Image (cartoon, rainbow, N blue to C red):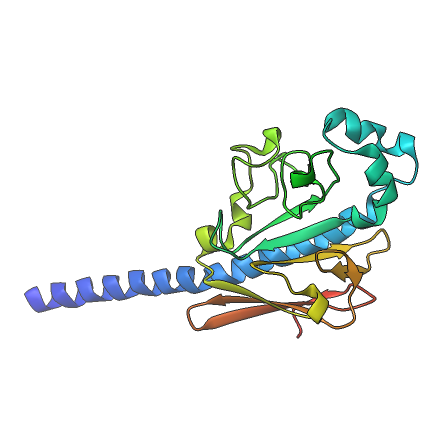
Length: 226
């Protein structure tokens, strides 16, 4: 009887362990799907956004909502104010996460097109009005504090060990990477946006597993076949 009970106990443990492995291995797939969905959402957002910031009245709404925006500079550098996904790869704040936002010019030099989703920038929100940002919970917009989507924190939420980005040399930055889409869905990268010339490849690593996403130049096609 004891042997039978032992066999039953071991069988139950094996079943539970198999479920744990499925859940553990499934996390990278969910992270991959989440990132792909947000990239496509950002591209649609770029295609549907009618704010081109080409005349003074077009920035009035944002100037009222974000008083620190430098309206004149936004008109002068409107081509830089595109929706972007920035990957946070350093050890400051939330490692291996990303944010979707429009970087804006500010009167203060320290935050003028500073390349970070800070207070005064236009940060994307999901349908539940949660900010799609994995950056600092303190150095961010007021309506994003304690109101961010946890799924963008790929390391914290899904255990992703590393995010690698491979693309053109001008895309390379220290401890970060970013991809933009313009109003026609065309992709750009770099601290100062420049059109992609080669594939922008994102690699998610977890243990011995990896998942890829690629953004093709010119067309902006987002695909896992790369």
